[in-house]
Image 1: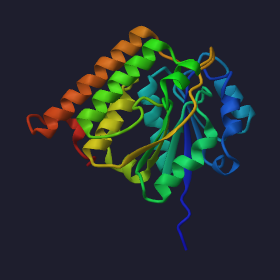
Image 2 (image 1 turned 90 degrees about the vertical axis):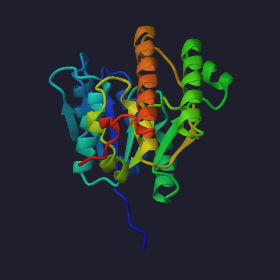
Image 3 (image 1 turned 135 degrees about the vertical axis):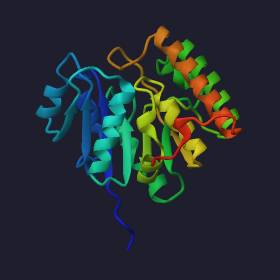
Image 4 (image 1 turned 60 degrees about the vertical axis):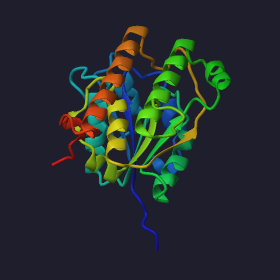
Length: 250
């Protein structure tokens, strides 16, 4: 008999009071048993709403620690539950939670170790969906560079809908990653370094006023930090340096 995998769905939340319930309601019923919400010291009623709709596993940072730090708490708590697969989705309703079973299936069938939701099936679809033009082109440029240097063929590297096998989370030293937005890029670059199989499926892009988005200045910092991580990756692969981002967990 095939093993029944335990799935955890983690929500790194910050000021998500207007979209949290919409996100939860669209998570398929069979995946609502192990939802973990980590609130990064929101200034709104995110935590109150989470309790009102019946979430049991709610963790609150006493001060704002950053997007990467939020995910670190998410994954620590998910691993404690014994999860075999961990799905991370932003609770801003920008991504379709109904796709969770499809992400999970690729990992359960041992086709991939990591699955991503790709918002950029076509340029027209992404921009009509509301993605700012400058973000679209920045996404395309960084994705092309990452695919080229890392030997991948992903539709995009910058999505907030992801699924990881337990083995990935137990191998990659994500605790050493940035507490800022570049955490996601460090994680995927590390995944490539350790030889994990990454795949993606299309997901409709949705941009609207209540969806979270970083501004132009933060986007620039994110892009530069991504390029710096790629530089460290190359130097490490060439054995010119030892970087703790690419050293297996002890």
